[in-house]
Image (spheres, rainbow, N blue to C red):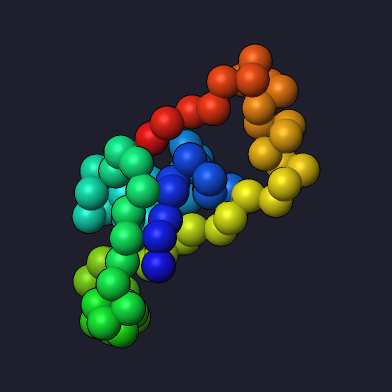
Length: 78
């Protein structure tokens, strides 16, 4: 699974701070890839409350257009 935090609905919100990717990578720069073999282990750890859950939610195309318009057409990197 490839995750680009700047393409997440939760990016730069309180939910972002409590996300698996941010907790482990403080926040990452660029795309993060979670190997499918590692995913069950991460789910077990988050299910036990040892790490946060993955809160990634892809932005809708409409939300992306609104974000670009409010950023002056410049996409955030992060």
